[in-house]
Image (cartoon, rainbow, N blue to C red; front, side, top):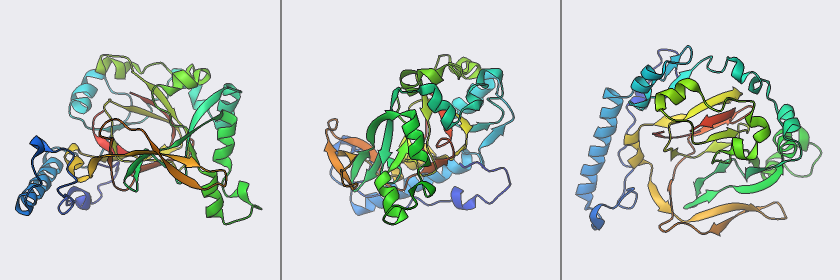
Length: 318
């Protein structure tokens, strides 16, 4: 589903065909380690998967993502969204006084608060990190820098590169796309000076799930930063503080059509001459499962929205 305030024609999205996208080597599992299925059996499987996706869209998925006018009560939220795995957009969710200091965040304000403390920034040639590139699951290059240096890199676009030698595309490629997107509770572990500006938990969300968040993450980037198709194993609450964030959500029945498969792991690295390469990296036994396909979402402004995630079920990107 996608966010849509108007009646709109969503027939194309609801009736999207999954046929013709499966092969004997693209299944996300190998049941009973059987030999590849005959073509006739694969055709039957394709039909069954397409039927399942169609049934999900017609009997379960809403026509559009529900918009709520304010924070919901815990029990209805649990019953109508969490248990049914249905997303929603909540307006005016951060109007309270506990978000007042975070609403004043800007690159300059955050840089001043962070001072000389080093942070981890993910850098890629084109904004795609943790994505399948040439058959490998490629991670971003991780660099240590101050928040002020990170902010300067975000601002160094067309205006900041004037007078340099080479085309704008070549120069931007050499600069790379900087995205503050480290996981694993990065707001509290790497940005303690900013953590006090946001509530440690969202009351109604915590009451609905019956637990405090395992992680509170901060993402800051521009419209070039994208996340590849992936599945989260947490219930996520994404709070957009500035800018906007676009999510593309796919129902679980579509997962089998995304060519999910274990893949060797690599990591982007930039050479001293500015060129990018992918270096091999040790992977868990069997590789890392990744989806080979177009990146599913993007964000802009002060964050792929400047936002925090309180960690869900589902497959998507953003």
